[in-house]
Image (cartoon, rainbow, N blue to C red; front, top):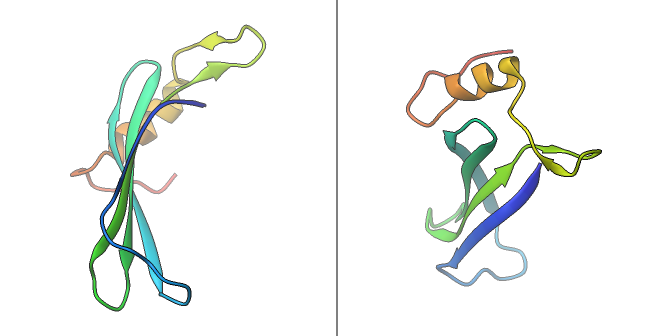
Length: 89
């Protein structure tokens, strides 16, 4: 994959020693691209400290161009979209 767009929002300052957790969610899958988000939270306060939304494309490294997802990858990703029941591969 190659990231083609990244939007990062910093919400709160984190300090050395703060406990953090990062949760990721799949928002959208298209023929050749995927959009997902990472959220970083302060474990002790529950506050969201940063959000990064990314769009990435599936790349053929030899041809150096975007290509469709393999059917099985697309099927699993579709079943794991936000709001869907997760699937175990």
